[in-house]
Image 1 (cartoon, rainbow, N blue to C red):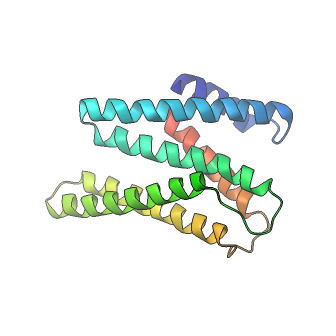
Image 2: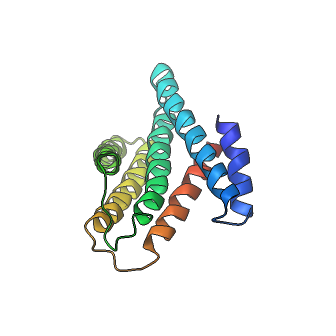
Length: 163
């Protein structure tokens, strides 16, 4: 699934945006990335691989919210009306971001440099949560905010396909 995502993602990045092909391939990319991310979570728990676990969590969050931003925009309202799924993704990343940052700080304190990776991913995740909440509450005034977030998160998911 990761290979399929990587191939489709490469095409999507270089092709025209917003047409029927982009939308169809984008859906295939999203679903295949989500499957790959859930498989990463399973494998990370079997093999005790923290980095793979982090990549899995981030992939689900990035692809899930990147896709949902388009759905929220299609509602046509100036303020997004988030669904339960939107809040679930955001709150899950909030919890993960706090835990990653906390565990990272403990690791650095215990002279384990991998803690820097945890802190970095934790803070990036918390930044995304802040963007989501601002958007859900109608506090984001930039007209193209949804598009920037969609592109950034889908590209982040594409980068995760390399991992």
